[in-house]
Amino acid sequence: MISQLRPNEPIINDGNFRQFIASSDVVGGNFGHKGLIPRSLTTHPVGVLKGSAPFDTSFKLVPKSDWSPMVKEFTETESRLSDLRMRGNNGTFIPSLDQNGQGYCWAYSTTMAIMMTRMKMRLPYVRLSAHATACMIKGFRDEGGWCGLSMERQVTHGTPSVALWQEKSMSRSNDKPETWANAALHKVSEGWVDMASEVYNRQLTFEQVITLLLCGIPVAADFNWWGHSVCLLDVVEVEAGSFGIRGINSWTDGWGDKGMFILQGSKAVPDSAVAPRVVYASAA
Amino acid sequence: MKVNRSYLVPLFTLLAMVYSLTPLFGVEVKVKDVKGKPNEFIRVQAETTGKIVQWVSLDDGLSVFPSELLKDTKTGVVVASLPGKYRLLAYTAEKDEPSIPVICIVEILGVVPPTPPVPPTPPTPPVPPEPVPPAPPAPIPVAGLRVLIIFDASKETELPASQQSILRGKLFDDYLIKNTVMGPDGKTKEYRIWPATTVLTSDVEKHWKDAMGLKRDSLPWLIVSDGKTGYQGPLPSTVSDTIKIIDNIIKPSK
Image (tube, rainbow over all chains, first blue to last red; front, side, top):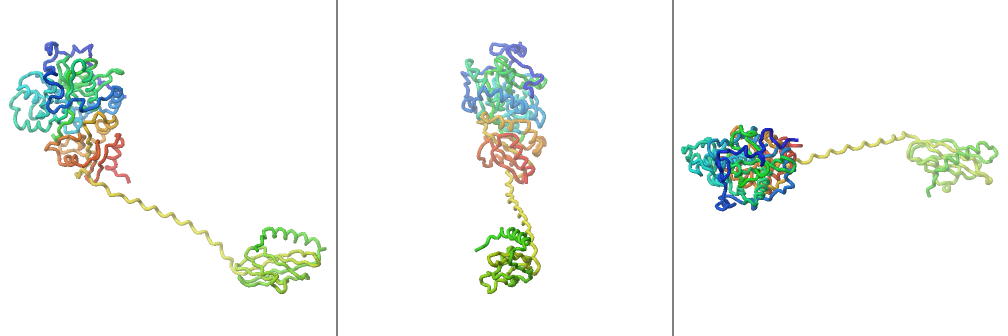
């Protein structure tokens, strides 16, 4: 039986999460990485973003009784998004993205979700530029945001290849027509899923995220405790009846297990999450 | 009236044996063997002092002319149509005492026709081969094996696990990587798994655009093509059944 856990991935939970927080940053009153600005459901309620659709109008929840058998089945058949990631680059693995330098995790999480969706559709592998999306939204300022902002722009403008806007580049010279012509090849189609709940109902968000991951739909998720946004890939039964979520970070393959890690307990419950269902099919 | 003579042979044989041992019985009959031709009346003469002689055929095929129609019953008349040897029995009586019955051989001359051979069983006619239906036209008229799976993204969470293993599992991926042709970029194999609402950009190859435009009766849907023939139909429920369909395009079963 194939193990659900990867050999070197850290399991981040309520007992050890402080090891993974940068002590120099404060986000929302808590220490955390810069980059994530918590979503305000007052100014940005679920469903208000262009092209989005609330989870309830899009999908049926997978009942919790089905989680364990589905996780086992997809582990055995190597059908998880992490399995696809390991062979999605023409038989080799898709490298982690690298945001290093700017607090643009909120754009890197959605960009990786788009790349994973392209991989699911068996489209040619293209490394996309998250910096292009974040720079245009923030006017080339190194400022925080949240995943829904990034996704909304990736619906209207698309995301260019790093061949047109180099990764980690803050140069305004990248902003040119050919860049956006290429970006238009990689748009997210309307109908992407928007998930967020008030604090009293965050369990619903967790179950919605689990449902999408079980069906191979990648999720970009914001975690206020971490001050960070990451792309989520799999559901993992860490212990019998205890489910965690595997994600892929944007801190290169040198972090975690080729960039991958597991969140468990309350640390696995996102504060806001978005998921692309369909992206444009392009040859490059 | 047809006489059942099945009992007569053993009976008269026994009587002949008994009477031969008792010279005390009075009248005698003597008859000699005769020969004749098929379908010819043959006379058989009895020597006896008895006034009336009775004639009895002991074998099928030898017919006896009714005695009551004869002027002198001491001459029996027989006829047979087939060559062979037939037994004829004769007896008489005198002063209320029967004679010993005697048997003579009537030989009908000629070649006994051989027993016709049993005709051979005619050979079982070969079952004509079922007509081979013409191969369906290729849904993607470009040389090389290509596979396109189309599904309803809005119902993705409702697909059974076995079909999700078709969309994402390693076994099917490895099979498609091995069997489909290489794409124009020299890196990506020619198989795609697309939601039905996928927007195709201008740089997507024409054959994929055309394949997405083909009529579909349901979702998820499978299209397989090698450029000469192919398959279009509902996506099977398992990886193995899907591979069987594609194998039949690669190597058609006869």
